[in-house]
Length: 371
Image (cartoon, rainbow, N blue to C red; front, side):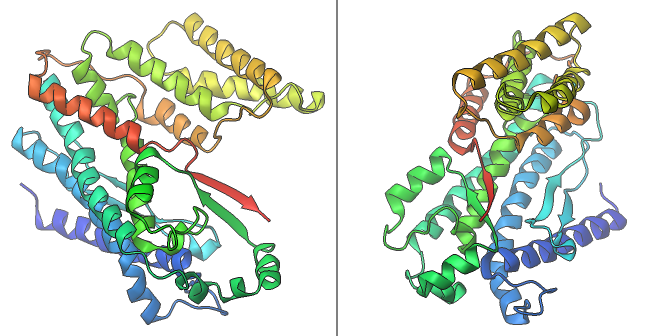
């Protein structure tokens, strides 16, 4: 089914991604980079960083293999997993070492059930392993003094303040599952704050896999969550996915334009923002008039909410992904010839995927602050 060239190409991409995530892990966990003259990433710390990269990449692999094996089961031709390395340390930018992994479906899928099975298999497989990883991470936290081995300056408050004042601080947002597992399993004396979680490889890898799981389960277009919606709601999937997308971009852009902004800035920013929303909706099958009504309605309601409550801000970090969804991946799901409904077992699995999405979705996953 696959040639030697395919196996070679995908293996090389996998190994490059493993190396890239290990390098990124060394930067996040130990503050060591291969490009740093003050604290270079030695072979010892590279090996230690594998405690992050192996579980992280391993769970992404399990996710993609869930898709792959299910497509093979349904005799749907697909590629091996493409891993996308993405270490940005050479330009001084923070990264997690990868832009994710995908498989490419190379056949036309003509069945609603096949779409559902292939779509739901990946996130459920990855989620099960991620929960196990987090359970291990929370129940095997190192002693509290571990953080001082990485940040010895924390032992002296004045030095800590001076050091932190020169750095970009990254705080990770809670999702329901991470928060619940922390409260149930972690020793409060050992549990780090959310701006120190990246120093704990198993917690960091687990958090990121939950993030990617939720990202894939967004009930939009041809994401895994879009396949779930397409299977569960055969007559209403289009309105559900468009509504979900509008809510997603509404939350992402809440606060991007504000009645309290400088009028000169608003004259420039408001038309650009309206155009951005319209472009994101442009490829849908809705009438052009409907697209403009939705666009102006979203911006008007956002503007009004900020006027009433200036603190009601969304998470602008989602806007880039909203653009990718709208312009590249697509908001709507393709139709199929075989429209037979899901079995009861499939419906239960579909609702389980909805619950997994709710548990894993982090409204504000990465918050940056320069102190």
